[in-house]
Amino acid sequence: MARRSLSGVQPSGLLHLGNYFGAIRTHVARQDDAYYFIADFHALTTTHDPAVLRQNVFDVAATYLALGLDPERAVLWRQSDVPEVQELAWLLATVTGMGLLERAHSYKDKVERGISASVGLFYYPVLMAADILAFDSDVVPVGKDQVQHLEMTRDMAQSFNARYGEVFKLPKVELGVPEPVPGIDGAKMSKSYDNHIPIFPASRKALKKRVMAIKTDSTPMEDPKDPDTCTVFALYALFADAAQQAEMRAKYAGGDYGYGHAKLELLELIEAHFADARTRYAEFEKHPDRVEEILRAGAERARPVARAVLDRARAACGLA
Ligand code: ADP
Ligand code: TRP
Image 1 (cartoon, rainbow, N blue to C red):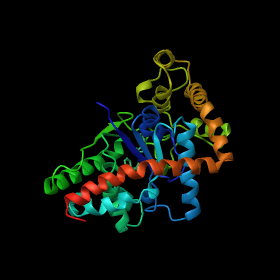
Image 2: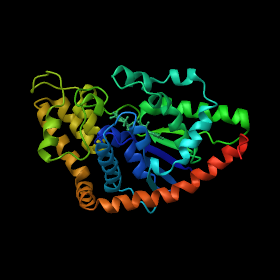
Image 3: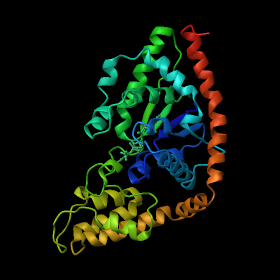
Image 4: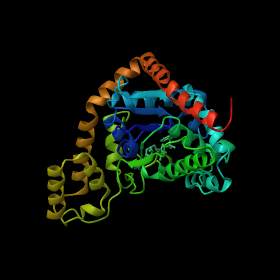
């Protein structure tokens, strides 16, 4: 049975390796019956400079396209170009208990980090549920931190279905990697912790600086080292094939191999992995109009799908 994938990424700063392995890589791998959008409505909860928002939307779109998203196959659009999701969010809000939203970790974390507790930030999971349900999605590829949002989406869909009949499909989450990708300090990679490694750094020098800054323990160079507790190895393993991983494990176990050496090998793999994509990214930077055209065309394909689901939901609850 065909499975429709859908996901969204917020345009809130440059994308990093955590975003890549947690979500984007899966999106690029699944392009049949696939819907991906740039969550600019969501970004308004944290990004308040219009020029920055516009630039971030472009960066996300160009990143996807450079990494191989084919807009003829998968649908790629800007969330705000499909306003139907807002209307659907309202319908969902009317079946959603306050308690459900009050339990959201993401909301609590953001408020703790000093982001203003706006109604929009609180309502964020309702809009996210609408994004997902508006497309009859089967699978939602995201990172682990989004799992609770998916559970909330299923809750809202079930509440609506219980009240009005079977209107919504219940989507499933799909994790790109089982555990969060670590950042250079060993904690979860996130742009909010400034521990990230960008997918498209400004230069090789900038990338090298980040990689060389990965925190390691103080095992002396000549001693054997444990790859399974090392952030350098964890990142290396994401890029390396089985043979390369086995080789690096042997080097760690053998001693006389420093973390500096491992970092340089990691640097090479990152460079090689994104080399072609970087060239394509530079091309899109020269032609922002092409990116804009792709997003507009994507919205034209996305809108009728969301419209049909919205009409189904409106009819079910007695709206004309
Ligand atoms: P950030 O934490 O940098 O703000 P986002 O919350 O915008 O990242 O995440 C965008 C997508 O990337 C989500 O699907 C999220 O689950 C995934 N993601 C973010 N950081 C990681 C990570 N360190 N490991 C795995 N997936 C991640
Ligand atoms: N909340 C997601 C994030 O921070 C972005 C998002 C918005 C999303 N709507 C979505 C992800 C719908 C998947 C499906 O990464």
